[in-house]
Length: 404
Length: 174
View 1 (cartoon, rainbow over the protein chains, first blue to last red):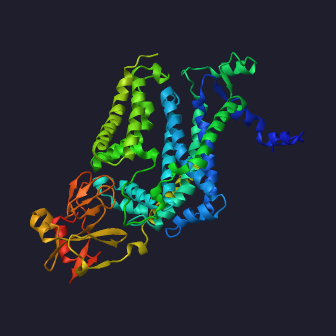
View 2 (view 1 turned 180 degrees about the vertical axis):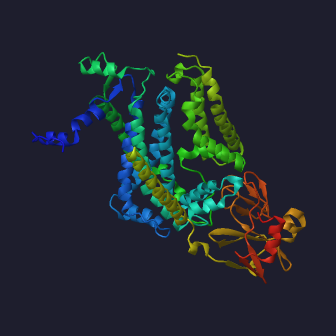
View 3 (view 1 turned 30 degrees about the vertical axis):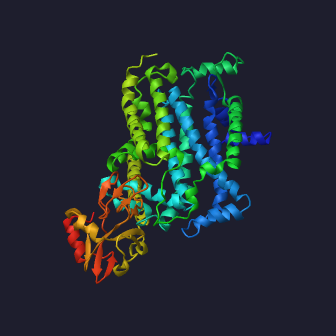
């Protein structure tokens, strides 16, 4: 039996049993953050807060939602929206957060790409982050099925059909995923389970890994500078807070983080109260009908770029291009052959690569929303080819980069 | 040393038990997701062909999928080539197209434009002719012909009749 003394206070009692002082030091007061960062470094906390809002609003929606193909549509559009007090609030928070979370994920991702925060020891941060992107995509897709409207049904049909792998015609896999020949009761109930249990569990585990991966390499900074964290933190603890290049996570950095969160929340609730329409597709306000395809099927805005890479090609080539687009970002730390960790604008040709990629993704997103006709098809095709070409060119561009 | 080999044995024993359990649970998990017997036995659909009008698309539901039935007009038949004729189903004097009405690209339901006499898919712009043959990308293949049997003037979907078997052998059903 370990030795315990009579506690002097509740704090002391807890500290003897849980080492709360030590935990507080390791997790907060002596977790060091560089000083030369900007508001883009707050996106992680913005994402944590958005995920919490999804979780809380989801818990309240779960109390009235019915995963049954006969009652799902009305349980959302009648029970939750009209009968439940503040049911509209939970639904609109959930819908807006599901859309905005992807906006922040993209900002977070491209901040990492711009500042080179994915290499030289930070590979696992990038990879766990990309796995989180995949998990959030699965969460968004499974959640989109639940209101069982026309877009739910037909998005479910189209996306599950992708698993037949084109000309391989593996319809058995598609039927296995659906539990039926078409999306029906078995499909709705299993995607409900995925949405409320399995995928959220995976997301929470991945968030843990993502944070842990940050611990040893530390967060990057605006100049890609390497610090001796022991030396800088010793300076800080000795009282030279001005001379030190680092600050404490809490309360120093956290206070700034939460300030950005506050600005974000004002924008977020402006959307929830006055401009939630963008997150709710009008076509999904028609109940699912297996015998009537909507005139124009398109995904939510955050999947449009990869959807547009699928669309302009013949079936098999389209699928391969789509598969390429899904995995290629994960490989970024290994395709970037330059050892430099620096902002893109100081890396020569990589800066051009970065901005071309952004413009191309915006073009793909815009074309994905428009009907697949005439000039839009052509622009979409060129943008899709450009996307692939940019990734093929990346190792060569970065190999030629001068060492800093 | 003796302890080590005992630990080694216990580790292997645990590994064996866990391995058997893991494989067993994977089998159970896989089969839990299979379509249920009630879903598989969703049965057959009977369609009375005498009420079908020429150049008017009839959509029936079979195993949750839409089935297109199109009676050809004499003008359509006059223009048809061999590939198109091979996909026709003949009942008495009349010729019909019977196919699963899901675009072979990604499973949307094409709409029938009776004026242009072709099927157009709104999702990604694919087109099929009146014999269900793909004439404009992205669909890679014709609309498939479901298993059927002709029973007088009734079309039985889900059962493989003589006519269907012949078409299947000729390779025109997919």
